[in-house]
Image (cartoon, rainbow, N blue to C red; front, side):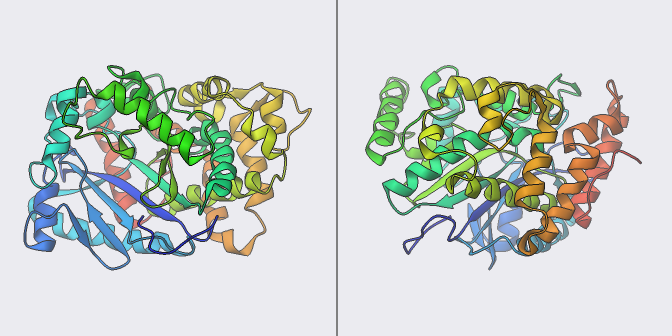
Length: 414
């Protein structure tokens, strides 16, 4: 999301969604994003303008990213733009024997299948690979939706960052979609985040605890970035990676676009579901910014280790995780309620912030699928079983690919 004018809190939003390119029959990854973009642009362009959206590649050659062409004033009907372009991409991939696959991780991709983008900006990817070895699942096999929300100054940055830090731990309860890796159930419903939080262990400051530290001013945020750059310097003496995007926390400040970028949301089965989750995330963020349940001072006071503990339970159990921190529950309007299942917390938030609001009507209908049937990871597990054969797993993910192509929700029932 690029910004050419001053945007204030909730004036606009930018959305980015990543998909895998796979073989149309086997569903194994196909590293042909460059050929797809060339089919549109006539050359190996890293990004192409498609009107409402842009298409681009980042790092892994089997990945294609669709993103809004700059900030948009609202999410209303935005899923239709994404769905239209998905259908256009599938049409371009069809003669290549390929198609798009949703969800946050490929269920059986081997790490040695990674092929890096070999054209423009390849020096950045080569540096990443040299420093971190991008063959690991935490670099080569993860697809997410990013939400970019603008701020105009330090005061707005403070309110937005304080709110998002509280929201981050519970996002996997709504959005987890990655229960399989290496051909088997991993034991986590959000395996993407489990591997993501370990992908920079060689230089721990790059990702920290995933939940960002309590920094609320640009100068303090810059100091955090400078500490990351210092830790990187012995491994990256040319400074190739010393940019604000190297920060791998679950929410990062993008001062080049004056936005906070939320990175903790797994990709769903179709854009209608992705954008419904974005509606919910933004509505709850707005309620926190408006101090609906708790003050800014209280929001500022949370340490990342407290929030990380809640996040880890969501990575494992998603909507079935139990939240027993009374102060955290109070921050979302559930004072004195005792331990609460994460799915029930989201049901409370959807009922109070989404339901019965005309601008959220379509999102509310999509979110009811998650409320009634569980997050996508749970539906995938239910459909595949705990120990599926390779063919059974392929059949489930073939249904997911069909859901993406048709813009349909995924049910655990065949």
